[in-house]
Image 1 (cartoon, one colour):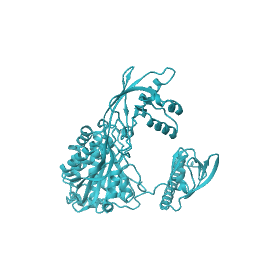
Image 2 (cartoon, one colour):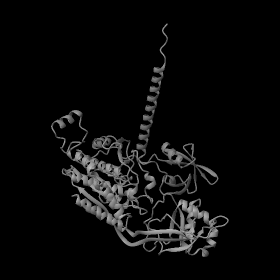
Image 3 (tube, one colour):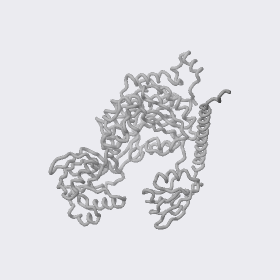
Image 4 (cartoon, one colour):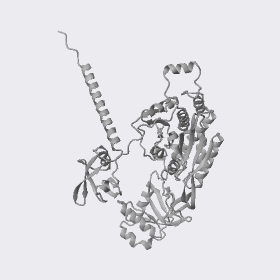
Length: 584
């Protein structure tokens, strides 16, 4: 395994001017990338084209296909071997075009709203009166004939069943559409699992919270106002099958061309804005890392594969497809580096020892590269195989997959406020962060590709946390999964968790904490109706239980050692603070 050379070896290397050999940590290629990153960084050009010239890139849309073809062509311009690889198809495509909405009588007020992807739009401008949903569901059923053609303003109802019942009723009524509280910011999502024969028909408008609350106030009370609304929502369903692709581009390795360091992000976005931070930023840094390496004349020992996966927002579909279609490659992949956290700087990676030592060696040139932008490698017990980005399918296949740590600069933005919302535009991106991050990607990928061996995989994956196999509504069991621990223990929907291992449960956090801290055989008290019953969940035969207990033992030992060290330090400080005895 390639390790950081000792001080004496580094001195010899410098003295003999072999720092430009491919085995040096800061060889000529790395130095050239660092310099180009400062003087000729084009990451902003890539992102501007993606967001302003192409726009949002929903999986199955023509915009996504344009982005894929454009990025493939860019990789080819850099001198890489680039192509589109199919991973699957959607039965129905979706295209979002222009939308507008307003109160139009007795006054005019523009409205800020969103709709989900794969949901119905209007046949053109639809003007109708606004009506508040009756408080009682029975009244809604009774007045169904009077609500034809109206914009129905939905009430916030407690309980999923009541809300679902109203939604079902609206699907049977001939309303113009429903208006719901969309929150602030308004988050965009959608369900692609639809068929051409049963397309969604209900127009569902999610209005910004302050405007929704204003509507409710105007339509309710002792003297409700008469309001007319108009919405023009150009949502289009496209008949499939729609073929779907990943973009793949290779900087072929000089010594181990069939071994890989994979760098990438997802090419798709939700379509409520421009998809700038989720994940135009990841695409742009990947493109610029490829350009910087190519422009620097990089000749890595193993192949650096740049990838854009689509279908990420629908469940990591492109990356899962790639892993499933290429099982023979998994043992040849040294690392997968995924940028999918917005424009805050890439500030580090985490991994278990000895993998962390290789990461430190590969990323040493980045420490202090840009003042005010930190970078560090964290040593951890292992990596979680779960996760909501494209590194996760690789981790589950045993490949070292990394989701970059991001943040730490003084001017960080709030990614949680931006991603999947109407604010995910180019203007929200920090250009200097992007420029720094493109260099981070390029240097890390190159140095990992220069190691003598693939990254080690010992203790790579943390064991999964214990799972009961239920869906919770607070502390109540909403649904029990078949063939689960809960099912084997005789749990049923409606049961309420009262205590775990003798400890009272007050909320979901208690359930999560106590379940993981308990012994392998866990007594759990449930309330079923008016009766309390004792049950047991048994994890002793779980194949990952031994590793869970081993890690728990290590943590407890480390905690005890830290406590003892702190006590000793406190005792020593107290002794030093005691005054010297007086001399007789």
